[in-house]
Length: 69
Image 1 (cartoon, one colour):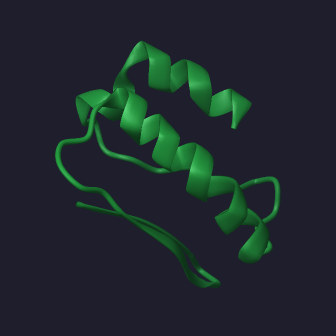
Image 2 (cartoon, rainbow, N blue to C red):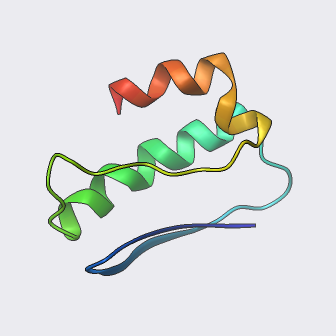
């Protein structure tokens, strides 16, 4: 599986994930990739994290961790 980040200014981080992803692994991918991508792409504070309704994206633990990353 591949997780990627992109913005109008271009693509950034790609993460290759081996095996199945659960909420904990998804949160780890976000922690390790989102902030560095935001900085590298020079995104402003009004950025939006978009994701689909996959259960690991919507879990309570993932929803609670988004504000701390």
